Amino acid sequence: MSALGGPKQTAGVQPPTAIGIVLSIILIVAALGLAYYLVQMAGVIAVVGIIIGGVLIAFGVHFVPVGGAPAAMGQSPGIATGVAMLAAGAGLAGLFGGAWAAPFGFAVALAGGAVGGGLLMAITCTMVNVIYIFGMGIPAASGKVDKDPITGDTFPEYKSQGTEGHGLPFISWVGGVVGGALGGLGGTLIYLELLDVYQAQLPVLLNTTVEQIAPVAISLAGVFAIAMFLINAVLAAYNITGTIEGPHDPKFKRFPRAIIAAAVASAVAGIFAIGLLELVGVF
Amino acid sequence: MEEIVFGIGITALAGALATVAGAAEDTESDIGSQGDPNSQVQLAPQMGYIHRIFNKAVAGEPPAYGLWVALGAGLAWAFMAMQINPILAIVLGSALAVFVQGVYATTAYLGRTASLAKFGQPVYIDILKSMTTVTMAHAFVAIFTTVAMCHLMISALGHPFPLPLLGLVWGIALGAAGSATGNPFYGKERQYQEQKFGAGVPISASGNIVRYAEAGQRNSLDNGFFSAKLGGPASGICFGLIVFFELWRTVVFEELNIWGPIIVGVVVILIFAIIDRYIEVWARKNFGPYTTPEEASS
Image (tube, rainbow over all chains, first blue to last red; front, side, top):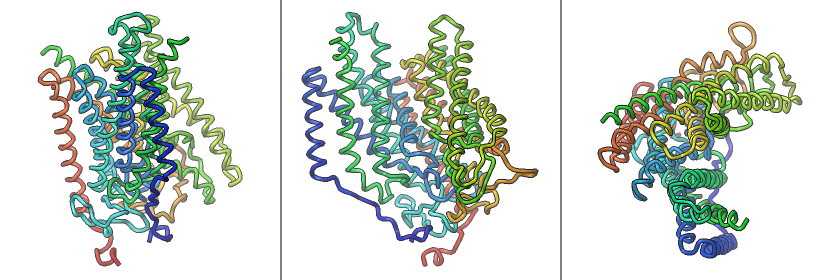
């Protein structure tokens, strides 16, 4: 029974339909084929990297505990802001770190991106609890589970009357950090793949050296990485529909559908990002 | 060594700028009622509670600040390309971005409030005149400090992103940190000040926001005064810590080992996990449960 008095809401898990999966596979294969046609094998590798990055972002968004407007009134647990926006904030902070570490190699940059996103979420989630506890005198309580799967804390008696819970239980805190880290990892992966493609294409196209075109390549890769981050975060937010408490929320089980959608969206958007310079070359 | 000391100084300055930015951002969004608590400002007239609260939430704080900071950074970047002094260029860029924020605030207030006409909610022109400029002033502080911080990251610390792109990245992060930390304090503690302290707002009370002040009707300036005491500074600390730790771990530990910043980042995350768990347990012990476990489970 929810606090609204209505029937208990189901998780709304809808498995992907057969036609959806077939269409997705066709679009992804077409994108890979087009990538091979435009930039040969380097293009295929880049699109595969972009797809993996997009999938990581969409999956990561499902971990982030977002309570939206009800959380701002202490009516439901989570962080009081939008799903896509919070995930974007964390992922882009990760991208900032990843891009900074790019000259040190692929692995360092990816780890730097993941830690950057996780760090933003760790600080933000802690400050949310600081405000709830020291500013409003409200302890954390989940509305979706009776017991914290990590700490074993019980919640029903800590839920104030007429609410679905409030604050960030430890499982939601962990979910936030994992989500931020996955977002930062995915965003940085997309950035690095696009940077590789642009650094190979631009010197040929403009008849210059790699050093001379570095600012243009970095800017283009950064803009497209942010764009693809937002595409995947918003797609995942549609899948979540409103609020989610983290990995223990029944809505978390909806993620397979978002992963398929993110793979297709990343493949299609990736082709535009890769094919852009070829198009410029034509004109 | 000298380079590291210089980097630490820049890191501290960027952290301080971010702290001011976070505080100004949250206070601005609370005066303009832009965050998630705005749902109640929009809902109140529909429940029969006419109010004098500003209402400009046509976008969330992260995309709005992403736009304004990227705009300020882009213009500052263009002015710097025209060989204008960086400080002057950042001031000019931020000032121009604030005019866009002002137009946004005006049209958003008029549009959102006019849509409530059928519930009897008037559009108060005096509210528009007195509050838009206050939100613009706070927005200027937030945009200027964030753009200045981004400029430091590029010119002093050598981040590869161009200024407008960095403005977009940190503008969105600023909105995310500010709305996450500051919104509950404005939403629960201020809009529902009449409700019990130490408990969430019952869903049945939705829309019944506090509309009267010590003298006369409450307006959004009163809300800014209130949230500037805790919600704003807490948001500032949140964003300041994010920027500081993000830069500090790279500036100081990258020289030792390329994996240094990553290891330190993981350690900082673990420290925050311990702090979070400690205060969570502290609250459960000190505030106690609302009901006995038997009652709650029945």
